[in-house]
Image (cartoon, rainbow, N blue to C red):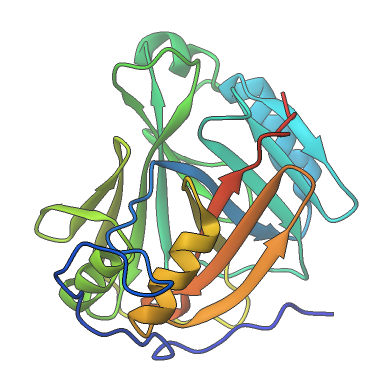
Length: 249
């Protein structure tokens, strides 16, 4: 069955209140810690996972019946690939930036003739960026198309992202970049969701509800608890909390 996708325009929010204090059960000014993972819908995940391992130095952190999680460290930036009907469409997703400590060395692991931006499979465009990191590879940025980048940036600020300049936002050293796209809507989008790590998923749920932001769902798993919200152009944002029992490697 094809995953349900909601059309753009469903995002609702109101302006931040300025008290910065607890109001009833509401916790103000909760802030994401880092960009935890980016998830994609793909029709054939194994070849993409193989390229992440062979080309990028990642390893399989978790594999389940319907998804595979890969990265260099389970507690840092990761990629998730969910099974879905194909072919997938680019939709709002434009490009993924991956941070490496030595660009020349990282590019040497890629096939000969690979361009600066390359396809991991099914339209997943990736660019390597040299920056300080203690991992072989980590998340650096996600570039999205937006029907109205300025309005979208303001909405992401409501979700705790920090505006850096223009329509570039930061979370824990990584960034979300927004550019105007001609048609971000897609029937079968490639992007599943963007996840940010938080100390308390429940506090973010309460804060979102207080601000009138649509809470799509909450998910309780063995290692994590998460709250999914809707952002502009149908983008799903996950606020994920690592439980004390978190045991992925």
